[in-house]
Length: 303
Image 1 (tube, helix red, strand yellow):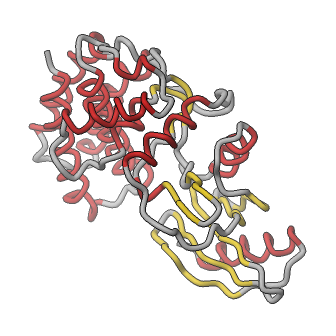
Image 2 (cartoon, rainbow, N blue to C red):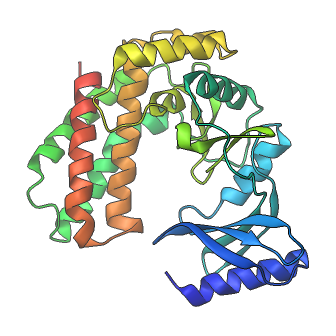
């Protein structure tokens, strides 16, 4: 990360809002993005968030979400400098409690009921059918570069998903179809003194809302069909579309959602490995994650 560039983003944003330089407190920083809390001389606060591609369109997503009455932090100012996005956001203050399943179901129902945003990328049935093939192409590029040489099992699993994709992608356009947060889990739902807000819209897109519902409980454990079914039913009870419970692609809604969510993750991690991160030292960690999700996806989706 170029600290000089991050400082440039910060000073330019201060100038944009007419505030003198603030005291910066690091909250979370990694190689492609960072979050800091700002304390200005007048006693006001804000959040400074910065990110590079492919996370550099979050300001637009947040503004579109707010215009559609989705509860999100306000964007005070944003700029782009050399493929880096910098934003000053509303500081929501400390959370009063952690989000639970009822909170998640209600927030997802609100998000998915909002009018679609035309500027967001779209993942429809055709796009979902293409995901395993795109993942295969990423793997091919990695292996051509002399990486992931001992990943024949990954190639075989992706081949199985390619064969299953046409039949299993059917039903992608069933409701709820529209806003997909894509990082929807309890840590992305801030519950504070003034209510709840959804955070982290850097990879929001238009597509099947079931992908959000499948992501809520995380991906560290083996997919739990029963637990996900209960969450889908809770979502419908809290205003989510009834079709969230409908079978699709020859599968129950929960199997379809969990399987395709894992495919989406696999393609994303492979693209990171070959394009966005492109660091061979991270290959063992990425390969481990891809293998785990691939085993789940094949088990859920293969005929």
